[in-house]
Image (cartoon, rainbow, N blue to C red):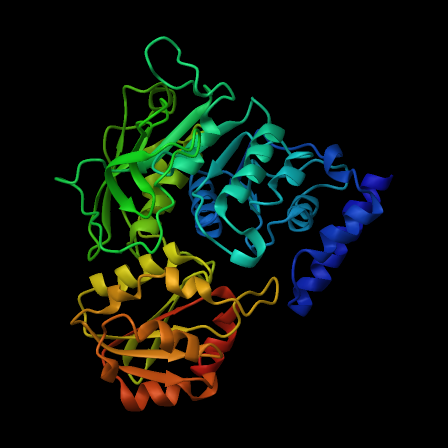
Length: 476
């Protein structure tokens, strides 16, 4: 009876909240108060894919859900982005029958990196995808080694039956596939790995790859091995600490990806993914030797999201080629990018997480690589929507020097923290006559119309998206 009541109340509250335009966590929160153990009584489908990590959770979860739907499966996923246990509870209870049976062929759960363990106490995913780990949300998360501890506990809670889908290029994510006796050799000098892993990554061959190092990192989180803390070396780097790493002291190193991005054209959006058909994972997942697909908004993070999504979808028995075909040309609907017009000038909003230098660096790189005369708008007004902070030291981690490019004709710094942005840009070497300052977001559109030219690329975070769009006269 408690299960019945909790599910019924969650459904009712969700419908009311949807009519009122409210968030999606409250119904699950109340249902869990009514019956804290309700999730343990649900009958789940065979395929439950969980997605966590620092960057790309929402976009990758959407790609997975879309590909599964295109393959003919009914899918439930927390598309509102409520990714802590209350939001996941709302999703599961609203798609469940009053008996507790979830009426979907598959579930895709975006999980907050610090709260995934709580979710996995009740929900054991068939596959767990970890996108990446990097400096993110300084006040909340601190260093990403701190978050790594949380995710390791989540992996342990998920259990050995869960297939891990891991970023082979990220040394911190890669440690999650290492057994506790990591430094013991198995006889041939290789580190001991858990068996149930699928690896994804980007090309190790710079001769045929379109990935190039452009950013100049302000810090080096890849300098030391996350397993034994000795110095690490790299055959190449893709971005930040992502690349072909190898510890100088222990056997820890990059694993050969089962699915690997081998080409990416930033202008056309065409990308190629090669399946390592000699690997156990690729053979069991019917991976093809070469997969081609098309990104609507190409870029390094987007490429990682696509290859990760294809790898995760393949755990359900859907072929990698089918998943790639579904993703081909797909425009994300989660609001991470918004296209608009200002006086017939094309504009693109690129959501770039505050307190996350990787997100900003890749958005800047994408804008420059469009090879169009442009105006860059960078808005920092509310640093986070989850907590209050006025900490802006993370601005110094971002390689704003990428914007020192001939195609960038104007730069507009905007929002409450315009002075902090101005201080950072004063040391970029960028011609200061290109830079304008607008503290009042309501004055932003007028300034852009009167003082700038070319395509418009706006970089800001989820926390500032609504105010930005309103300030540009584009609604919320």
